[in-house]
Length: 128
Image (cartoon, rainbow, N blue to C red; front, side):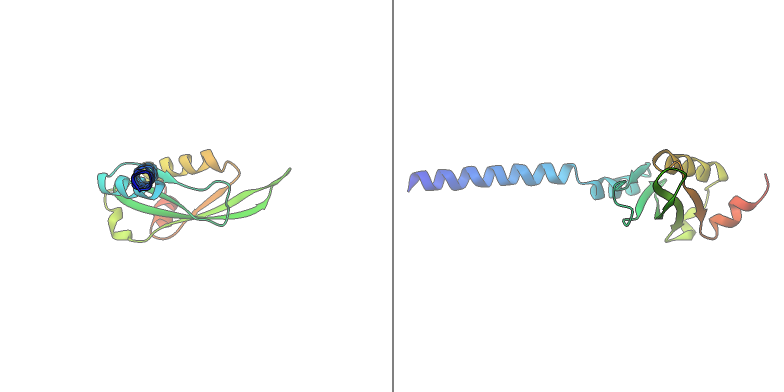
């Protein structure tokens, strides 16, 4: 009986340790923390084209949808559509911020053409 109790306690400790590690390395938790702190974080499953990616920057959550197409030598992500759920949070953002986001997206998807949803699209089309 004592052996069974020790085994159960050991199994419980191992399970709790496993759950703690899973919690610490959870990418969605890191995304939420970046949103709260206003930091930059890029959450993406590069191997899965069907999953959208998320970017946290200065407390704003951007979402990007990837589209697969053909390049000269292979199938790659050739088009990306990026938007923000709450456009009112974009106050204070500049073209430089969006150029930074484009550069970060192109690091993972160099063949992609990035399209923005309004009102970001209007800002990016303006001269200057």
